[in-house]
Structures are given as structure tokens and as C-alpha cells.
Image (tube, rainbow, N blue to C red; front, side, top):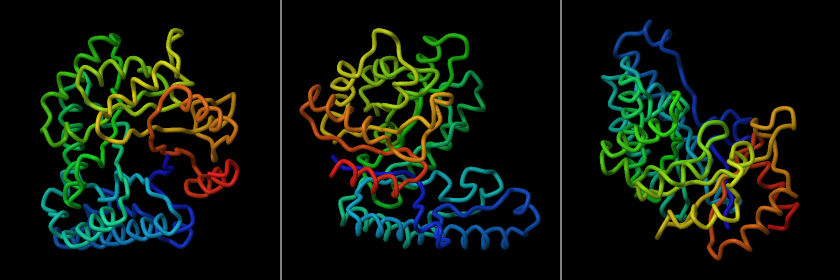
Amino acid sequence: MRLGYPCLNRTLSENKKRPNHGTTVKHLRKLSSHERRRKLNGLLHKNLQNNLEILKFNVKNNIEVYRFCSDIVPLATHSLTDDWSYLEEAREELAELGKFVREHDLRVSMHPEQFTVLNSNKEKVVKNACEDLKYHHKFLQAMGLDSHHIIILHIGGVYGNKDKSRRRFIKNFRKLDSGIQKRLVIENDDQSYTAGEVLEVAEELEIPMILDIHHFNCNHRKEENLSDLLPRALATWRNRKPKLHFSSPASLDNPTRHADEINADDFAEFLSLADRAVDKDFDVMLECKEKERALFKLRRQLGL
């Protein structure tokens, strides 16, 4: 089992090496077309450089799983940047980043923000979601990374009819470019779609499912239990190594919010359950606010 963390390295960010320096539409509108591209290129180069620093930090500390920020390319899908060929501008740096990932056998992924809703009942929202998925796919593709490096998405909204909304997700998924389909992995959420419901969609579409343990604890049907769901979820990955998400609740009063760190006892209990339920290795993304620091602490506590 390999552990990873998403999007931000606390240690490096304190040294001003954030992976997602950005700007605003309001600011860009004040600039000429040439000035906009120069500004955006400067931000992108800094972000790619800092992401490479994060990966080097991870390799040095035996961390092989990482998630890139979705906004690593500033305003990539906004109409104001339509004349900006960011993939060409950063071609060499993207190639270097991808080469590093492959040489060190790292596992990287991306997770679009909550506004990327493929099952929306509004055509414009679905269109924007498709464009956003295309951006994520092209970014990973530009690094020369295959479909092992995934894009993670939730089913989306319920819109008053959960079954219809799930069917709409399936219908819209099947319209996506085949390259995006091969990368797309779906995850259970903490309010709308339970692990069992997402698993049914994953099995129908024959795509992988990420089982989020924290979301399961927040949102599951009475008949759902991890011992049954875990083997099925891992089986959806077929010949790819499965991946799970794990986090701890911030408090009993606010159980859906992620805590700063991982509760070591809860994680150990989950590993014990997994050891009984499955005979298969998997990776775990730790979704907590202290990122690599929480990972290091968990390793120390459990001797991992």
C-alpha cells in the first residue's frame, strides 16, 4: 500500500512554492492580449516548476501518490484565455514533468472542482463540464501520461430524481471522447450518491470506482457495508492498481468536513477490515488539510 496526498505541499508552500499561483478575470481584462499571455505564461511556468519541486520532495520522502491541482493552469477554460496556447507554451516543462513521473513510477491524478457536473439538467453546465474534462485530459496527455493517471469525478446532483440523474450521467459519459472515458474514475460523495449507487454506475460503464471511506461513513444506505463494497469497488479497476480515499471528520458536529490529520486508530481499523475483506494491494489518498505532514505523522504512529 502506498500513501499520497492532494494538491498542496505545506512545507514547500511556506517557502512560497505554491503549485497553483493564479490571477483574476478582472485583472486580465485590464491587460492587452500580449500582456495577458505574458502574465499567464509567467504564472504557468512558476506552477509547473513548483509542481516538479513537490514531486522531487515526494520522491525524496518515498511518497509515490500525488494529485495535481485543477487550477495548475490559470483560467484554462475561461473564454478570456482562448487565444492562449498554454500546452505549446509549456511543452518542454510538461514533458519534463511527465518524464519525472514515469522515471520514478509515480501515480498522479486530477480531480475537477464541484462545478464540473456531467449529469446536470442544464445543457450549458454539461457543455462546460465536458470542456473542463477535456482540459484535464489534455494536461495529463501533454505530459505523456497514460490512463493509469486518472481524472476523478462525482456523479453530480440529484435534481429531484436520483435514478434519472444517474441515467443522465451514463448517457453523457458515453458521449465523451474515448481518451477521457479511459481516464475517468467515479467516486461516492458525502451527501447525494452512496458508494453502492456509484458502484452500480461504475459496473455498468465498466470504469473504475474510488471508494471514499470518509464519504461512506457520512452517507450510506442501511444495507451497505464496507466488507461487501470494498471487494466490488477494487474489482472495477481490473488490471489497474486500485485507489481509495481516506480522511477523518473534523468533529462530530461537522462530520463531513475533513480534519487536519488522520485518526490513526480509525485508519488502522480500516486496514484490518481491508485485510479481511480483500487480497489485493491498493493505494490510498489521504485527504486532510495538513497534507504531507499528516502523512508523515500517520506513518510514525502506525509504523508504515
